[in-house]
Amino acid sequence: MTSPASGAPSAPLIAPSVRRRMACWLYEGTLMFGVVFIAGYLFSALTQTRHALHNRHELQAFIFVVSGIYFAWFWSKGQTLAMKTWHIRVVDRMGRPVPQWRALLRYILSWVWFIPPLLLMAPFGLTGGEISVLMIGWVLVWALLSRFQREGQFWHDIWAGTRLIDARPAPSA
Image 1 (cartoon, one colour):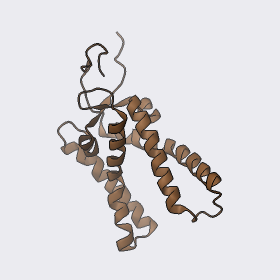
Image 2 (image 1 turned 120 degrees about the vertical axis):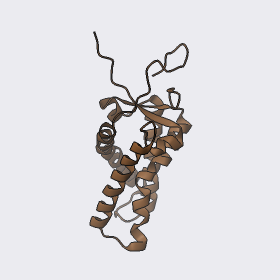
Image 3 (image 1 turned 90 degrees about the vertical axis):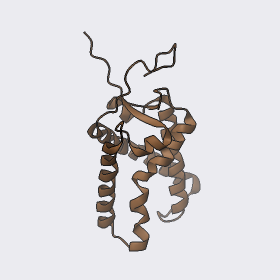
Image 4 (image 1 turned 60 degrees about the horizontal axis):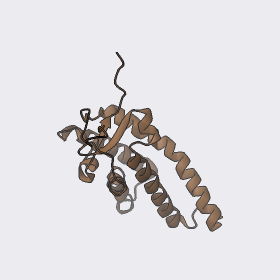
């Protein structure tokens, strides 16, 4: 959090626990179901797609862009709805609000949560169950790697120049 006058942090920039961040991450996934559903419906209505496999790659690209807009917009405001619920805020390294370009960079770099397991699908011809196990395993490994980072941040946040901080309200006296 920053004080309006100086732009300097007024509270310590403490990272939330990995458990809280992962709970927020799961809740975010639940909320994203609605965003993806509406984006997919809008895409199929605008393109008059009648079969699920027609325009599949275009739909994936559209959902990627819509998700990027969603996250960049909310992160530049400080929090998504899930982050508000779990009292987590995204800021830059100095504790200031994140500009939209940095929020977009964070979105692109956050795909490291999914890309490695997805890249293994085609060359090894993995089935749905194998992909699920690989995806869950990778997500757990990636989350636990934050324990090896000095400030406890996820690595994509370090690369993007952002950080997640605890935004719980101060207890009243």
